[in-house]
Image (cartoon, rainbow, N blue to C red; front, top):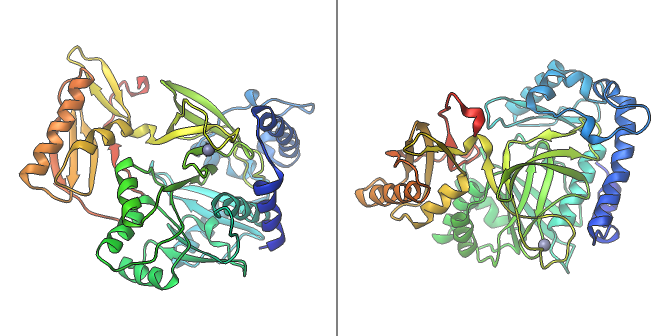
Length: 435
Ligand SMILES: [Zn+2]
């Protein structure tokens, strides 16, 4: 790790790279893209055949996804990593929960597969330093820069996050797999000025604060790695005394968005290009090109997430595209049906909003397990809670002009090792691709 590289990146993002107009953003993207394509043609066997000697445009390159990345791993990466060897190393790291073994100067890790497939990622030490610099630039509050204590609660698949620590800023890593009571006692002692954790873990921390086991009040709190629901956000804000809850939208495929001081998400378009597959009404699936990741290129990588663009500009004045919210995985969009048999997609966010009005419980999950059949897990399973949830889901179906779903209930269990997705769909229609 090089502190110099981290500081250089920090300064560039924070002070020296003011991208105040769309023109400035696009000029920077074009310049980085030209350089990146030249690099890929020279160093990646996969891209050598795809990028013409002179120029080359993004639109001519094929899309990537997890299966392409895993299937063509050896040809795609530019550091000579072999898939089986890297996979073995990543699995050994995960088992030992140690993460020290590296592939030369590169780090390897597994990405959590919400879709069930495990992905493999490789980052060079320079990329890791740039990442740390960017994250610091995006997260440290205005004004005081030094002396921050940053607590990171993360799943071990994010080895990227672990690489930090310097005299100016201290980092403490908390393993979400470890006992939460012990984690919270450590947190109380560490007294972070900045707290970063998945929303499901932030809720546990908020609850500890509610019962007086934690009185540390960070200056800023970030939700990462999971979709942040509005109800969760309000709850966490009030328990931890935060005027707003921030977000870092980060996945294996890149650091995609961050909240500005206004609390609005902006795409990190200074380092990535986001193409859009429109889903209508401002919603889209992002196709991401990371202009700076060279060890394992991410080029036109189709993410399964659904994002909603913000209609108005943000008051912060940034030219980076503002995002209204991240609505979860496209695979988790529920499929309701009208009496006439037409399928109506119901976005995860629409379901969580409908359940804002249900009462009598605290934690929940909704899974579509069959044609117009929803399984709801609740932490409180009394008649009042069940009736309230059923009423809201029926009202939602009525509003959408759909058949009312059958609603069945199960007990809610918290599992910190699994990404929380409040709304999921496990059932597939035969004509699913139409959704
Ligand atoms: Zn903003």
